[in-house]
Image (cartoon, rainbow, N blue to C red):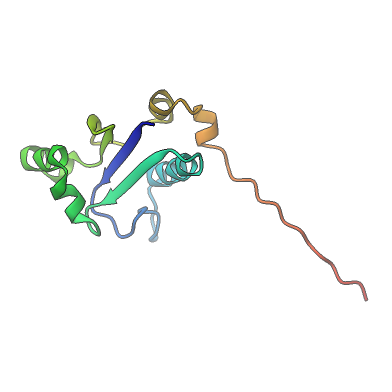
Length: 120
């Protein structure tokens, strides 16, 4: 099975979807990662703020940061190979890499609610 590693720039939390102004791209990539994990796809996401060791241990990421600085982030590795830098992958790219249709990656979750009403 293929694996995807996402090295995020420094963010306030693991997904970057908090705060008064949320980047819609971070919401999209957070939802897509959620769907990939739900389908048991091997995807990891690292935040420079909370997981700096992951950036130092990986030789590809360490070299990119040395050569190009933190503006190179986000960086995406597919099976350890650089496939994208300075932006998150599109849904179509993720479809190509995972074989999971883009329409499934962006599906909104279905929530089933059961209400029990008390009658007087």
